[in-house]
Amino acid sequence: MKKGKLVLINNKEIKYSKLNEIFGNIMLSLGLNHLPHDTRHTFATLLSNADANTASIRKMMGHSSYEITEKIYTHKEITEFINAVDLLE
Image (cartoon, rainbow, N blue to C red):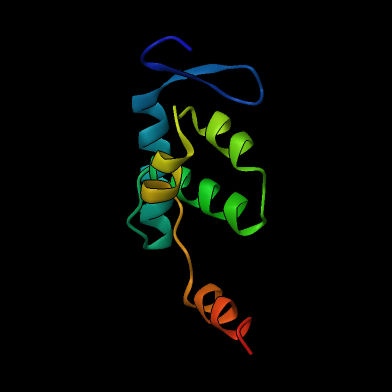
């Protein structure tokens, strides 16, 4: 991928600054405060919660190790911790 551009599903390339503007307008209209980069956290977390293969998650995220993905990008919910403890019953 060329620096400064993003390939979308419809195969049109737009600059990151334009994507950021569009995303920002959507967030503003929804009363939310997120950046496009935040979607990487959501993507990694949803895949992890669905028990996706860690090697696949790592590759899709473009990381050299899953440790980076896990420590920075995946966010566990309290219900997951409760379910883990419940396994001890």
